[in-house]
Amino acid sequence: MIKAKNILQHELIGLDCTVIRSGNKSQIGIKGKIVDETLRTLIIETEHGLKKILKDSCVFRMNLKGQNILVEGSYLIARPEDRIKKKIRKW
Image (cartoon, rainbow, N blue to C red; front, side, top):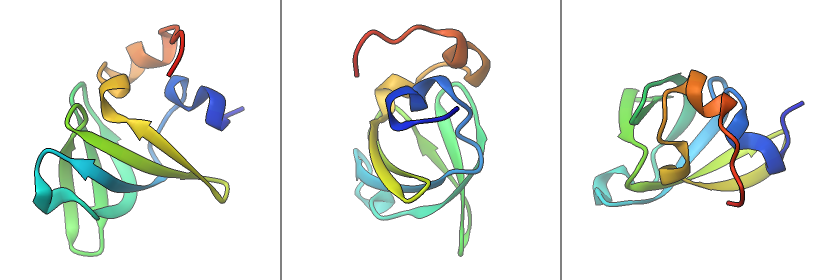
């Protein structure tokens, strides 16, 4: 079961997401639903179309059943299938 504590070890596709911090200032505030994930990017479907966001330079706010969780993008860098298997000590 996906919870705030173990969100990094679960599938992110389908979660609502907002970019809180980014190295690219034009990406701050982008929000929508995560529709795809690659090794280094999240693809977010916004009301203005699909946006490809680099994971490593961002902090994301993910909405999980009404609870907002801040996730440092650098913890997400891995292929989704590898990230799910990986043990994360502390984040």
